[in-house]
Amino acid sequence: MLYSIIVINWYAVIINSFWIFGLALLLAAFSYHYWAAQQNQRRLKEQLALPAFTQMYWISFFLITIGLAGTSQQTWEAILWIAFSIWSLYNYYKTR
Image (cartoon, rainbow, N blue to C red; front, side, top):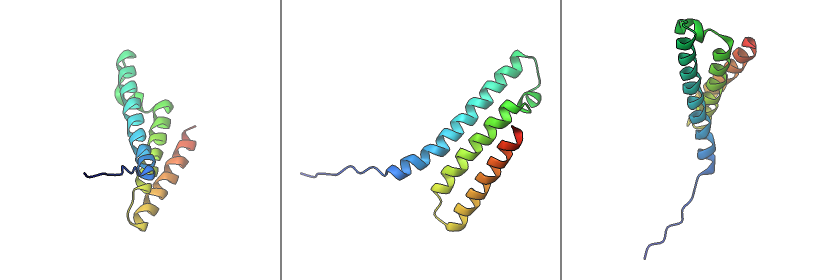
């Protein structure tokens, strides 16, 4: 009889949850602002230019880049994703 030990890589679960949650947040923000543009009879471009969307965009971009930095196999790739995450934090604070 074969026995297998189920081993969960918790690091992978946590790191991948960052980019998954970031994409879900971005989708939710876009969906809400698409609906709000229709309700307020605005163009989508005008609605997406509001600070409420741009802040959610940069927060979700930060979460996505942190997740991608954690799953990177190469050092240069991780450094690039960390640079993008710092850039997204800068843009988030600039929109506040």
